[in-house]
Length: 176
Image (cartoon, rainbow, N blue to C red; front, side):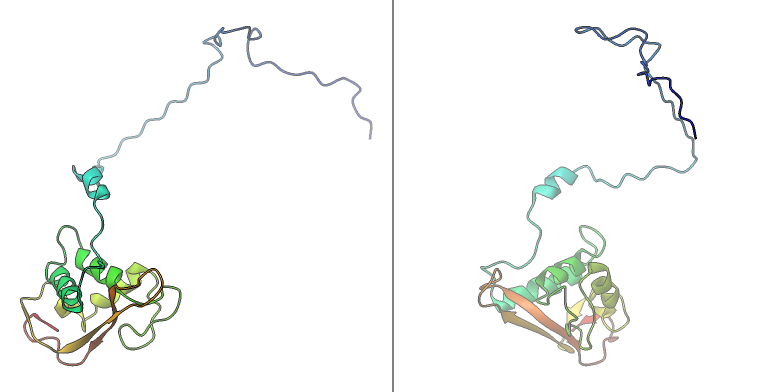
């Protein structure tokens, strides 16, 4: 196969070489135009106070909480689950959860992979635990086990080790 003997030459995209602070000729600057139209409105996902809310510390375990305060905070969050946003109470429960997200957990009784929040959230919306969301009063129908951590980054914090369904959860919106 014979190769071409012509030497390779650089190709200039500009009409003249650049010197100093000269700008590109306007005929060489590429322009891209894009337009689209749709009848579907674009949702505004950010609230007007999103920056302020990002600066706030998320609600979760605090070193100064006692065991009773930790349980009360979690049950209150579930009572007002969708305030300030949808499933916020479940998010609070997830922050208090004392399981390792990289291992299967017995937090709800049987072994579950709860490492992702979405899996944890789905279990709360299951019929057994859904009664906790937006409950009106509290009676003991199940067990919420909290344990104080000793050592590590959670030393001194009360975290929830398990939430086990022990009774009838459909008694008119009663939390357990």
